[in-house]
Every structure is written in structure tokens, then in C-alpha cells.
Length: 186
Image 1 (cartoon, helix red, strand yellow):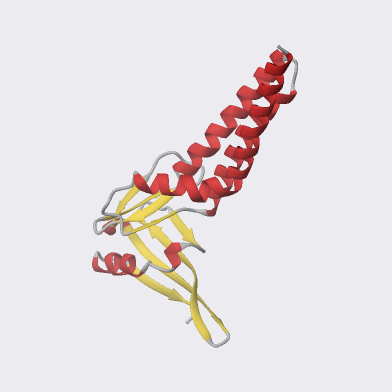
Image 2 (tube, helix red, strand yellow):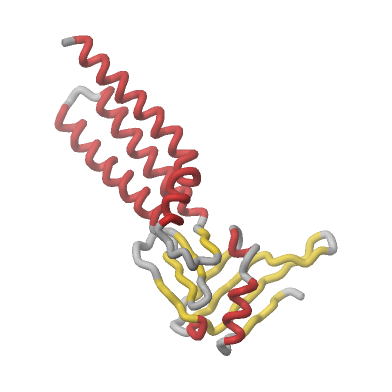
């Protein structure tokens, strides 16, 4: 009987170590490709915020802590109580990672920002303006951030990621639909 308990602890610690490693690799190596697999095939650009990696990492760390508790804690009531709380945090972190994305197609722009579970879809006519905030460094002018202002009053800011590299089709679609294109810092 003593050997069985030790084997359970070894297995729990092993799973905890795997989940701990996944906390650093999993959000980008597993969750991001999984998330993009469920987004429409018409998407021309799929991106996510930096928070997506953080919430996924926290989720995997919380799940790792569940297995550490099962291996190390003796009091069953406390073990189950703490484990359920940590499990809920883990699932919430992974769910928030899966629901943090943006993409555009030829017809619309869809965003599901960090810490939200519902996506917002915008037609190109729903854009009031697209603002490029430019900066000059070493004689070179480059885009420091983008700002999408919507007619419903919401504003979305992008200061890193794939959006800064492939936003030109959005500018074209917005201006073709009557929206403004503003360049700050020229």
C-alpha cells in the first residue's frame, strides 16, 4: 500500500512538471494553433494580444499547482478545496487565452479582446477611422501603433504584433467604405 501512495505522488509531480513547462510553451505552441483552427478559413490575418500568452501561462501554472497539492497535501478537505479553486483558475486562464483573438476577412473585422468571452464583428462601414501613429528613429519612419475608432464609440489600439505588419488591407477597406485614414507623426 505504501508503494501505491508513492507512485501516485511521483505521477502527480511528473504531471505538475509537464504542466509547469507548458505554462511557458503551451500558450504559443498549443493554444494559439488550436485557436486559429476554429477561426474561419476566409481570415486573412489572425492575431492575438500579449495578454493571451499571460492568461494561458497562468492557467497552466494553476493546473500544475493542482497536481502538486495532490502529491504534497495530506488533509483531504483542504486539498480538494484548494484544488477546485486552482482548477477553476486554470480553466479560466486557458479559456481566456482561447477567446483572445482578432482577424479580418474581405467583409469584416472581428475582435475578441483580452478578458472577454464574446467577439465583436464590424463591417468596414462601421469604422470611423484608422489612425497610424508614426515615429522616426534613425532617419526611418515606422508605425509605432494603430488605432481603430469605431462608429459605436469603441477604440481598439494595437502597438505590437502581426497587426502592425499587415494592416494595409484594412486601411483600404475602411477608406473604400467612407472611413478616414489618419497618419500622425509624418
